[in-house]
Length: 160
Image (cartoon, rainbow, N blue to C red; front, side, top):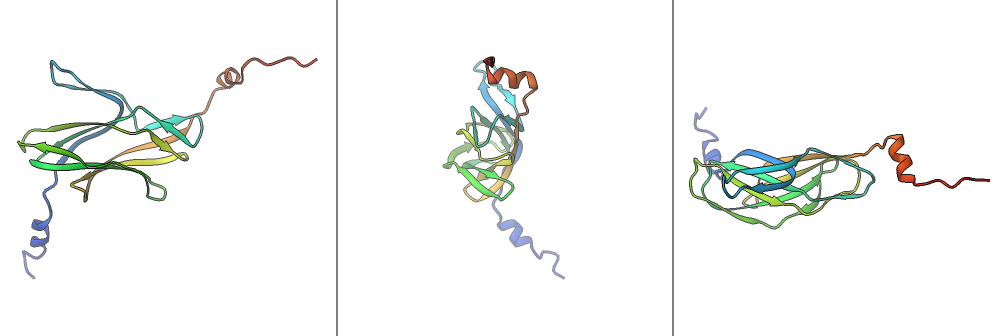
C-alpha cells in the first residue's frame, strides 16, 4: 500500500480560509474609533405572523482567517427541506494580505422570503465553488396570546 496515496488529490485542493464566525443579525455597525464590529439583534430563529412572509433588515457577519490574496465570496439562501435555492447573490471581491490576521466582512442581505415555516440556511461560497460554512435560520409561526388576538381584531360592535 502506498503511504502517499491520496496525497496528490489532497494537495491539489484549493486552500480554503478558516471560518471563525458566521452570524446572522439585524444590523452590523463598525465603530470608527475602535474599529470593532457591533452586532445588533443576532438570531437563528424568526417568529413570523403568517406565511409566505418576508423578513428584513438582515446582515451577515463573516470572520475568516488563514487566507491571502484576491478571492470572491457569494451566498445562497436555501430551504433545507428540499435543498431548493431561493436566493443567490453575485460574487463579492475580498482581498486579504496577511494570513495570520482575521478578515471581517459585513454583508447586508436582501429581504429573506420564507414561503413556509421550516429551516433555511445561508451558504457561504468561496471562489464560486467551495461552500466554506453556513448560517442557519428557522422560520416559525408566531403564536399570539389571547390578549394579542383581541387587540388584532379591533373593537367589536355589539349585536342587538
